[in-house]
Image (cartoon, rainbow, N blue to C red; front, side):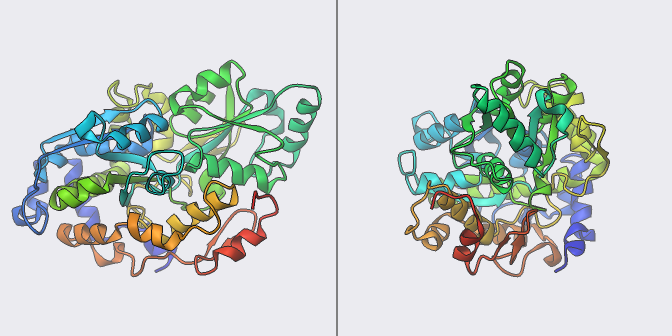
Length: 429
């Protein structure tokens, strides 16, 4: 299917989104009561504790709770709980709700793989049930480099960083979790311009909500994070947007909805019910007429706790880069549902694992395909899609999206990941 076809929601999907926009009262009219619950019976439990980080790509979880979609699918006791950092999310997933932690939630796509493999944490089997979004992250740069108007090309930025380092000052790039999506985007961007992220710059971990404050006091030169923190940086006059990460890789995968595998095994109907609620919320979040409402929901103290003005423009797809560059209805804006955003392509998970091999996080001899078979539960997504009556045009025919091309011309063929690694000049392996 072409990207143009991916970009257009089917009529049936659009109708479901319009029903969601009116709240829960119209949803039963769109989906029969017999199809509102998991196909093999009612949920085994009505409870789940789901974590999230204060980012706009967690919006489907906020909407699913506020619009009553979890309750509609037989899960009225779902809790959506703010986590202070991705490290805290990991630690609470290791604990599980039985020990005061969480069962799953909004997560960086590589994290369930790292956790299942026991890399930098106690091994805990995790299951990815859906992708939450495509695109929507940004790389920001401090006003110290405003005259450079840094974009996807880091050639001049590399010279400025080298001069600063030669003067004896430390230079730093901030991301949110080692081996996570933001770490991989900023590493790819830096390395494509000849900046070695391990040797030419210090890579540091900063929780998303603390990025702006740390840039303000000069803790880093550049960072990668989701919204609203990039736009808030501009609104506070501290820095600007170099690029939105979709410019590095168009329609790249980002966050995931994941659960502990033991929760899925013990509660397969409940897991599917949670997923269906989130999928309906993704459809709602995709509709342009809902964007202002979603921004208002995200701004609430219990969720992101940021001014609506820091959220609403980019939620609508309108990007002021803070340099005079303005793109409205940005082609690489965040996608929650269109472009098959919700489906967890195994080929995308493979890229995240191979890229982590590139930087030495995952051993080269690790069986990546076996790991994907354990973690990626696209079968549950397809089952949920069938129960919801999602149009076949919005359901991928296979588990791969095929070859992917990056802004620097590098190509990733999931059938030959080693050829991808060999194209990369800067790597640890």
